[in-house]
Image (tube, rainbow, N blue to C red; front, top):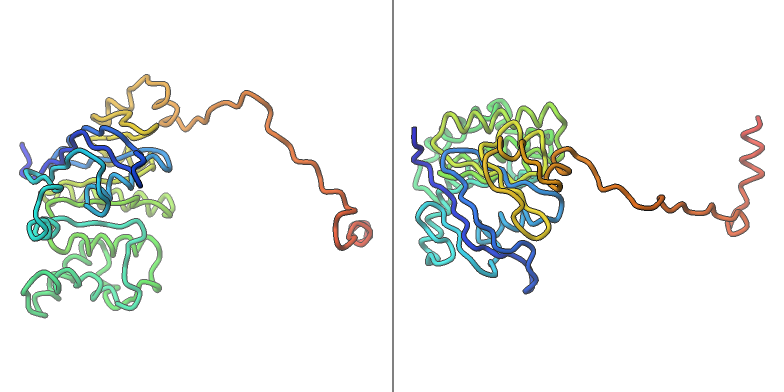
Length: 279
């Protein structure tokens, strides 16, 4: 069955900073209604790509289409309307510390809708229930665990019933159990809502658990785009090294540092510690 959720098309996109490219000539279509994972090592340009898709950074060249809309040519008011169809789970949850969970999740509704307080309360409670935090509605962010803050951020990202949900490193900093629970929650959202989900990650276990489609960045370019199954079956040397978590072999022995000469120390501890060690 074909999904009505929007595709995301990236065409000839080059991104970077200060005129220096980070990733060049990205071409990919992230399918509507599925979970796409943008994968790669640290510093490969994953988060930079996300910032460009959200227009937080200015691309050097190329186009990004959210559904039928080229975000780089949309007028400011039209893009503001488009943003209301987008939810973002930031890496640290990005909750406001001075507000409790209810007020954090209610923020987008208060800013963008004409809903009355009772209607807002109903929606907020439903979204917090969706992520299993209905009993923590009056808690402040500093009273929650890292996993709970991520789920609260997800509730806020979902509060406007978005067509597209972006998640920036959602499992970063979480233990394996909390990571798996968040993966399960994303899969549940995929099944229950007509929505396109894009996850930026370097977490291989999470990618294998949730991805339908994978875009791999590295070495300043696109290394792979296609189905998860095709990626896992690849015989590309670099991709296999990444997927199998194997570092490059060093050609020479690791450098060893000489011990500090005790004579350069301000305090001569050798006799004192030696006496203590002998007791």
